[in-house]
Structure formats: structure tokens, C-alpha cells
Length: 234
Ligand code: TMP
Image (cartoon, rainbow, N blue to C red; front, side, top):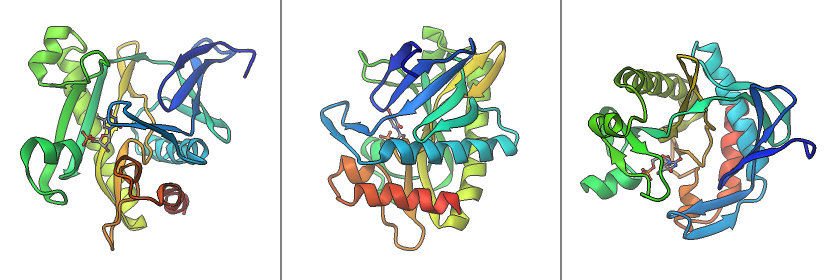
């Protein structure tokens, strides 16, 4: 790996070039940040656990007919993925009120939504990733109206399939974030799916098994990530 260029380093991942021009290696780090980078730390073994969870969930979504960037797992904490022309939007799907939806609406955390709520945020560190409506997306030309509609449809479909995978494993999918990219004119899901980017609650106890344990200093962070992997693996 050291012989290839580091293309990008983010808060939780590094992306490396590979010998193949349209394939990149996505390395998951143990580093964790929260509250727009104000809280920083490490979650022991997170890189390995998140790489494995993402590999299993993207593989599953592939079997359900959803196009993803996943090719194969390369090592403990590295996945080989297709290189995409990334769209600077985050699509969030919510089934239960938590986090910023609670803060924005005042509706109690834990309130189940009658139908999934889809939100779009503009990826911009300088602007603090603002919530966008369709007209804002068109204004900044982040995606065409057709692409935006397709991204939302795909996100709803991912939600449906992930819920059907996770609920038998006693995990409630509260909400999650997705990013998409283009390969030619096709849209492809190009993201991790992990306890960093999803809220997952134990179906029996409601216990939080995701990054909120780190964000809210609840303790038991490593154990929660390991528990999610254990359930996803079975
Ligand atoms: P929020 O309630 O803070 O808006 O987060 C909703 C979900 O999206 C939650 O599962 C965490 C995930 N998320 C990310 O993965 N990255 C982000 O930058 C944000 C804002 C949320």
C-alpha cells in the first residue's frame, strides 16, 4: 500500500490509489470526531470493525440489486472500491426521531415516524454542511433534479433492505447517512455503512449501539461497535 498515493484523508478514512485506474483502497481509521470536530478521540479497533460491517452490508445490498462501490475486502481495515465522481451531498434517512431531527423539531427522541423521512445536506466544511431543499441543490448545481430524485429513491430502497437485514438481528435502524457518486450517467452508492454513520438501537432494550455513545460520553463505545459486528456477521 505504501507504494501507492494517498488520494484523500478524512476524519475516519484514508483513500489510496491502487494499480487499477478506476479502483481505490478505502482504509478505515480508529479516529473519531464529533460535534463538528470539537470532540476528537480514538475508538479502539473501530477501523477493523467498521471495514467488516461495511463489507458485509454493501455485499448484502449488492445482492438486493443496489449498485454500490464495493468490490472486495483487501485486509482487516481496507476495502477495494470503485472510484466514483462523488456528489457533494449527504442523504439522511430517518425512521425514528433522534439527533438533529429532535433538535430541529422538538419532537421527542424515540418517536417512530409514520414513514421514512429523507433529508439532503450540502457537504461543505466551510458552511457546516447545511440542510438543503431541492431548489438549493439546483442552485449550487450539486446534482441534476433527476439525479436528486434517484438518490432519494435509492436511499429509501437502502433503508428498506437494511431494515429487513437488521431487524431480525434485533437492531432498530433509527437513521443513517449515505453519499453517492457517478460512474458515467449511473448513480452508485459510495459510502461506508457503520455505527459511525447509522444510529442503531437494540430492539429489546433501546440501548444505543452506535457513535452516540462516543458523542454523548455514554461509555461502552468499543463494546457497542463489536456487538453490532457480531450481529451483522450472523
Ligand atoms: P444527525 O441527527 O446528526 O443529523 O445525524 C443523522 C444520521 O446521519 C446519524 O446516524 C449520523 C449520520 N451522520 C453522518 O454519518 N455524518 C454526518 O456528517 C452527519 C451530520 C450525520
